[in-house]
Amino acid sequence: MQEAGEFTMKMHPMWQGPLVAPGGNRQSPIDIRVRKSVFDPHLMPLIPEYDPRTCSQVWNNGYSFLVEYNDTTDKSTLKGGPLEDVFRLCQFHFHWGESNAWGSEHTVDRRLFPAELHMVHWNSNKYKLFEEAVMEENGLAVIGVFLKIGKRHEGLQKLVDVLPAVRHKDSVVEFTRFDPACLLPANIDDYWTYAGSLTTPPLTEAVTWIIMKQPIEVSHEQLAVFRSLLFTSAEEEVQKSMVNNFRVQQPLKGRTVRSSFT
Ligand code: BO1
Ligand code: ZN
Image 1: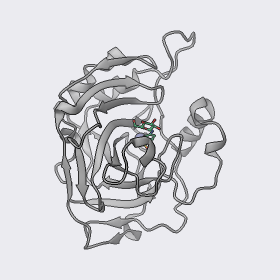
Image 2: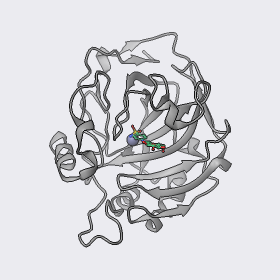
Image 3: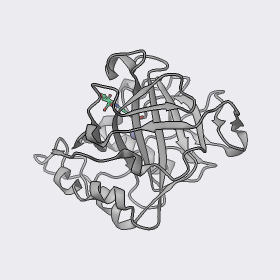
């Protein structure tokens, strides 16, 4: 799987450039070693409060498809858990593999999942815009949810149905009234948390990661629709399937992963 990731990084121009050079002390993603994580009894339950009316559009940005939310007010927020401030939802997206054998960015005791959901939030207590928050240590909070193959996910299907409209890079389609909470697992009380970074450029070390212990189930057919998307725009001659859009794992460098559960 690491080989597949390295391959993607070499093949795909978006991962090249100086920002990928080694250097940071809190880069993501990482392998979560369950027995090395430290139970923290002070970790609170997470409080996601999302208003489906803030959902606005889906776009293929050439590395994933983003479901974007209007983040001009505090209508869709995340608080609690390891967070001291209120964080506003701006988008969610996924990372996935060409086969079900790999695709997630984080791993659990080296176990790979076929895909991983990222719900991206920024600190609206302290900052006025995402662009401001992304520069700060405590600026962002991303929830990670592992996807595993099982029964069809009815909530996700509403999104899967519009994906053919954003097959090419830079295509956008209106997408409204989608409740992102339907993509969270039934148990949101059990999670791991650690200090990390964005996993694509600008790779900023601004993220409090919250990784759900319980995966959600999606069908093979639903992931097949993710894989039918393209990294390339309609104008390009050689079309490239959007698969293996995950970053390789990064060194822990002395960080502690805390767990909310024993
Ligand atoms: S991730 O969750 O660590 N994979 C991740 C990686 C990159 C971004 C977000 C999450 N990038 C940023 C862009 C901004 C954009 C913002 C919200 O996402 O750098 O330009 O405003 O969509
Ligand atoms: Zn991501």
